Image (cartoon, rainbow, N blue to C red):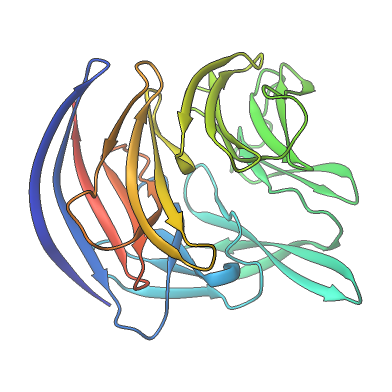
Length: 304
């Protein structure tokens, strides 16, 4: 994999007190040997986790050199992996079927030593693990389990706020209690996540539209067609506007949405590529996404 800077564009826009400037886009070129989809970025921005179609396998990619380290080639490994808060560990799953039943295994991968260990196995109905306060939280056979993963265990407090998606229903865990919130009533909620300050939730309802609500379920913004939404910062959401003909994706662009004003900005309107699945870097200044050729690209932003 090699690194190329392919274009430079200055696109200033003032939205809700923020000045967003697109500086450039870099391409991490890997040829055509494998298609990658980004799924996570480490807290320090030094590792991009990427998977292949169908969430098969998981790889760590250096955003500067393009160097690839294969973490797993197993089925399901690329489905919502999690970095530890320090970024020194990755938690991911593998899925296998016995008859018509799916069983999952939960792993811990050490970024430095590249060794992995099994945390839990033969799990039925594994809910995507959550990491908060130095603690890993997951479900096994409908039982919540916790594991201290920080060098300083016991940091998890009753006031910790985190989100789980259980049977496609958002559950807010706050002040030691859990509460299902359904801003749009019963239905399927996907791509749900909390803002960095944990005051708001973004989600997509029944695949028909993305919205933002507070933690009591009051809708405060309607983003409409912004799929795979992620928080760039507390005031900005990044997602994609993808279109298809019923068989394949025909077009897709990377979109910024500003809940406070309802404004949208197309970051890739000048490109003929199909750009999908944006993942923001924790610093809020870069976004990695994939193109229809399976390449990974990084947009560099200046946010004031």
